[in-house]
Image 1 (cartoon, rainbow, N blue to C red):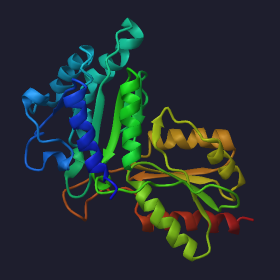
Image 2 (image 1 turned 90 degrees about the vertical axis):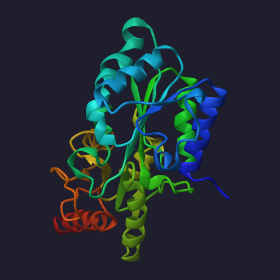
Image 3 (image 1 turned 180 degrees about the horizontal axis):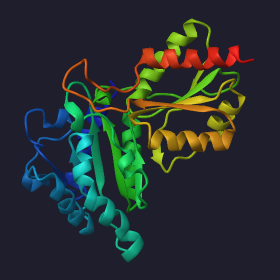
Image 4 (image 1 turned 120 degrees about the horizontal axis):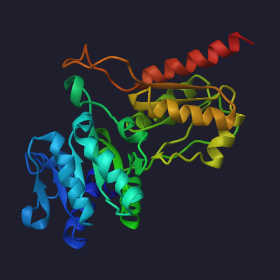
Length: 307
């Protein structure tokens, strides 16, 4: 039986601590659940370091570990907490290699989730890191993709932000692209929206629409694969970039790069431009299958009407 994303993270972390002299930092790592079952049940002597609830200071502690070349894993239990944690990482760890030729490799696990958890903690916030030099950003949603992230980190000496989502932890399957000729639209989903994009494709194809999918794993650097470029150019109506973050960041930037490369129209979908609350009626959730289906139909039907 194939391993789930949860099992791969746990096994990789255990090997990192036991065999690579690594460290793992975070708040409440050993609390009930061990961060959704992704942290091995080890102790301080094994390299597990429980941080205080002083979010602003914790990034500096981890940066110090990065400078010692212990290749720390830093767990941020809710991606929204990056607004408190990211300052020293962005302004010191990410710049250290370029300015002083002293690498500060850190493997940052930013964990997203949403649903009645309020205006601060929820959803993905990879756009915070996006504009800063000296960092890589990746959003693995499958077991093999998580190993790609970890292996790249170990081969290089960069700060790496891994945009995780708890919705992927039970997944054991790889997500394939759908590229080729004569698609109506091509979806470029990021993070948890990749699963909804797969559902939306099936729903739309029941009604005769042809939908391509280009799964975005690497956010920074974002490299447009040749087959993605050709698929978009040959499509009828361009594409949509989907994200679990606000659209005024990664999603809009990627859409711009794709438009520039393909000369095709692109839309973006992500979090609504408002704060989330603590109930189902006040949630701010990533694009659902139903919303993606409706958006695709609107683009296709409106474009057909204008011809």
